[in-house]
Length: 77
Picture 1 (cartoon, one colour):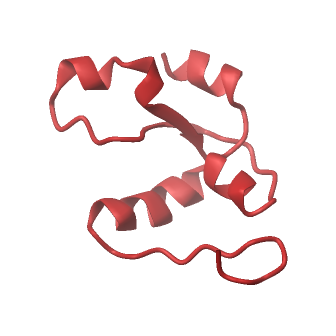
Picture 2 (spheres, rainbow, N blue to C red):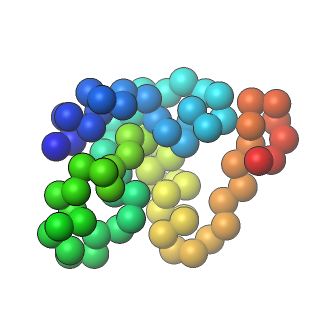
């Protein structure tokens, strides 16, 4: 499933939102599955992220922190 996700979307979704091109290495669950097998195996619940975005931004979001993203122009989105 990971390989299929990264083949279909080889670039980091979060980086692309900021007009940056970064290779994705993580198939991340958009909605945390928290043990729900149906959600875990749902291919529509996956997004491709780079390791940095997954470790910093995604984890912070899951812990309820607000993430400010910046566009290619340097302004917050």
